[in-house]
Length: 128
Image (cartoon, rainbow, N blue to C red; front, side, top):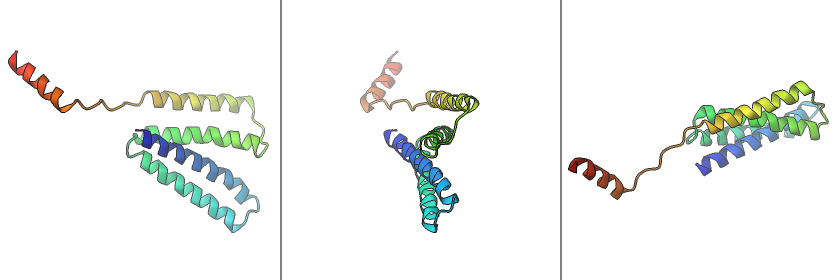
């Protein structure tokens, strides 16, 4: 599960970098800036696919998109000097709260019993 979450974090950070570079590429950037953007977004989808092998796709996508939006907004405020209105702050807080709720609601696999314990339980049921 740790590896899946690590892949999800890599997907989120590469999405934030790729989407942030979109503004640079779109405002008179060179072909190189477009290449960087496409590569980072492709890396993001690759790591999202790896994370989705162990995390349900709904949870993985909600975290990827929700946290990505929040982090891209932070980048736009501090790097691109974009203003943020109260309505947008409330909306972003709701997105983060939603991601937390989805993540906390995720079902976790039950641990596998040890080989000896499983056989002992079966034997106990047969004896009674």
